[in-house]
Amino acid sequence: MTTLSHPDAAVGGGSRADYDAIVVGAGFGGIYMLHKLRDELGLSVRAFEKGGGVGGTWYWNRYPGAKSDTESFVYRYSFDQDLLQEWNWSTRYLDQPDILAYLEHVVERYDLARDIQLNTQVTGAAFDEQAALWTVSTGDGRRYTCRYLVNALGLLSKSNIPDIPGRDAFQGRLVHTNAWPHDLDITGKRVGVIGTGSTGTQFIVAAAKMASHLTVFQRTPQYCVPSGNGPMEQAEIDRIKQNYDTIWDQVRNSMVAFGFEESTVEAMSVSEEERRRVFQENWEKGNGFRFMFGTFADIATNPEANAAAAEFIRSKIAEIVRDPETARKLTPTDLYAKRPLCNEGYYETFNRDNVELVSIKENPIEEMTPAGVRTADGVEHRLDVLVLATGFDAVDGNYRAMDLRGRGGRHINEHWTEGPTSYLGVSKAGFPNMFMILGPNGPFTNLPPSIEAQVEFIAEIIGTAERGGRRTVEPTREAEQSWSATCEEIANMTLFPKADSWIFGANIPGKKRAVMFFMGGLANYRAQLADVASDGFRGFEFSKAPETSPA
Ligand SMILES: Cc1cc2nc3c(=O)[nH]c(=O)nc-3n(C[C@H](O)[C@H](O)[C@H](O)COP(=O)(O)OP(=O)(O)OC[C@H]3O[C@@H](n4cnc5c(N)ncnc54)[C@H](O)[C@@H]3O)c2cc1C
Image (cartoon, rainbow, N blue to C red; front, top):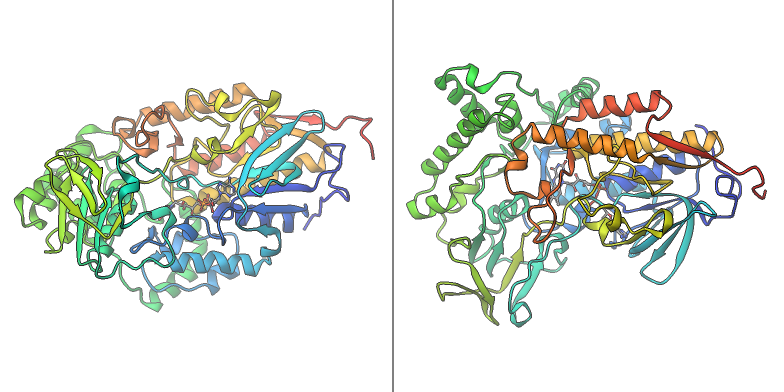
């Protein structure tokens, strides 16, 4: 281990800072970043987390049914070989408590808690060009200085709360899935849920088995395939553990990093019968990403291939859902080009007597009343609990929520008028010594392997700046523009921009639609990072510490 810490945390900036680095957020990203900077680079680091515990997504999302849709064996860190062998799991997908327990264990394993300050929201951060220091402000009115700022704010982290007339009149409980109260039990209650995305569909399947009555307010019908969840044999887990080197190698060299082989066969190159056989086989295997990327190579890029996959799922809805009117409402007619969903019996859930489907596209919500929700047809849906599964102001939401200012005191919003941009998803021109984990235009994949790639790259660049006695490191505007253009070009080769989804910001009223992901896959992304690093961090400018800087 190389220890780079400056005795007074001052060499780069020339003036004393409270910390070498501040990390904001203590989810998958913040936890690993803290470990890297503190334990491997030897810097003094403080992490601030607004939640009352670590875990990020998995601290906040405690709603019934909350789980990963990445399979358990690759929804974890890969950097610690011993941890990979020691940590067990028992189901194909991890439930929220399992993931939270895992992340809490990592924090304990590396003794990170002493440097994580919980219940502390960062309200702003401003770069002082004179001193080359960041000043970070917290909700309790305190201010801290640091030389490096790493934002690990999460890309699905800022709740989207719809503005429903009469919201305050409702006398039941109104909750967002991303802030699920620890004491809320919906057993035997009349429950309503707005939203049928990843979260909504998970919640619906679980809540139907708990609530006395569940009303699903659906804006957009969804393509959802089975997840194939279930218990896993210990022998299978042992086999995975024995093969982890090969598994991670495959993951890192794949597109979506979900741990399955992606197809290289084009859908229209085979007969209709063969296509149906492949779709059926993958329907039975389960997993949304597998259905989109493991069946054929071009479901997300070729309209004909996409239509064939969509038609297959539609035929399943017709087979599964008994009531024709419910089936009609549940059947999507648009492209199959959003983050793919999977679940344990989503369409089957609508055959239950206690589940009712209301299409709010056809019959909008007019208002909330003291007793529930009134729709345009005049019906009052009586509820004890209304759940907002309305998702997130994704990717840039938490950045814009902070008073984040770079060079010249310019707010991040002034830079992002046309949508959020970055260089490589980890840095931003005009924001020296600031890094982002899962910032805009990072990879669209199973996220832990992308987070690891980013954390390792950020640690490498900070280590390089430290060893060279550099004062600041920052991407050039040209590098950022070129990365944005690359991301846009790749996104436009896919069908994703043609569907209204959070991936492009379309779920938030008034949000400008923009490309927010690098859709070129993890293998290409990692290659890009490696290439930039080996070329002297091409696209970044390092400034020297002034020679007169005080000791
Ligand atoms: C229900 C759900 C299921 C998911 N399932 C999957 C899956 O199966 N596979 C997958 O790849 N991804 C999944 N995701 C995405 C998931 O968010 C990532 O996999 C991963 O957890 C992100 O880690 P992170 O550390 O980047 O962000 P997060 O886990 O979101 O952590 C960010 C943290 O930053 C904190 N924070 C933000 N702003 C501030 C501030 N101003 N001050 C202080 N603290 C702040 C937040 O409180 C939060 O704790 C899922 C997301 C959700 C919501």
